[in-house]
Structure formats: structure tokens, C-alpha cells
Amino acid sequence: MATVLEVEEAGLITRTVDDVEEDEHDLKKLSRSFPGLTFSVMLAHLPRDAISLVPRLTTEVNELKRRLATVEDHVRQMKLRRVEDSKENVRVVEIFASRMNAWKEEEKRLQNRIHEMEEEREHEQDTRFRERS
Image (cartoon, rainbow, N blue to C red; front, top):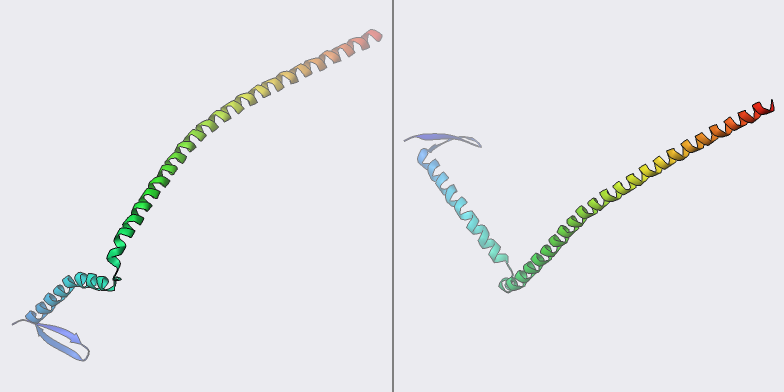
């Protein structure tokens, strides 16, 4: 029969392969029963009136689902408004840019006119000065 050497605090212990396999089998059985045991402990700690809480909790869940749907709808509407607002903002920027260009063109036209009038005035002054001389 095969043996397995194990180290235990004071020294070496010889165990058979069958003993090791049996321990592994026991460990597997224990690990399979653990979820059931955990569930049993959880059920034991539930309040006695836990079953009567189910309808109330179901109602609360349904109310929360309704509120979530409402909020999701509001978010969707806000996103649509943001898209519409951004389109409107683009239009406003285009209008402002076109007016700004018109103002700049008018400013250039007026500056040119002022420059022409100054040249005309200087020319008249020169002409008067020459006539007097």
C-alpha cells in the first residue's frame, strides 16, 4: 500500500493514499453542503413576518421601477432639448457672424469715405493756398 509523508509540528507522519483520498472526499462533501448550510442560516435569521413583507416589497419595487421609467423619460427629453438647443445656438452664431461681417464691411466703407473726404479737404486747402500765393 502506498504511503504519503506529511509534516506535522513535531515530525513526519505516514499516511496511506486511501486516507488522503478519504480526507479529500470528506472535504468535497463539506464544500457541497456549505451553500445549503449558509442558506439555512440565512433563513433562520429572517424575521418571522418576512413572508408578509413580500407584497409590500413588491409594491415598492414596482414604484421604484415606475419612478425609474419616469426619470429615464425626463433624461431622454432633456437630451433631445440639448440637441435642439445646440442647433439653435449654431443658428444664433451664424446670425451674429453675418451681422458682425456686415458691421465690419460698413466700418471699412465709412473709414474709406472718411479717408477720401480728408484727402479732398487737403486737396482743397492746397488749392486755396496756391491761389493765395
